Length: 60
Image 1 (cartoon, helix red, strand yellow):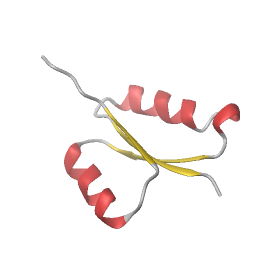
Image 2 (tube, rainbow, N blue to C red):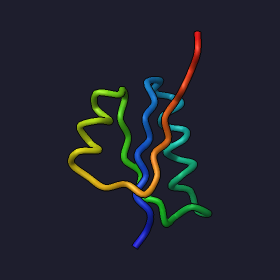
Image 3 (cartoon, rainbow, N blue to C red):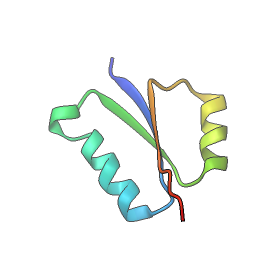
Image 4 (tube, one colour):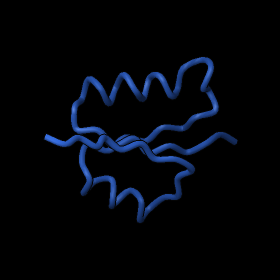
């Protein structure tokens, strides 16, 4: 059984690249779920348990 990861990123290309990295050959024990914003991530957190979540934090 692998690790469950929640990836939260609004940019589709970055989200896809990071998800691909987590599920790559060396990290094959990762089961990655993706959310495109905080609202979706919050809903997913209520429905599932994750071992790790990765969230974009930017200050503009």
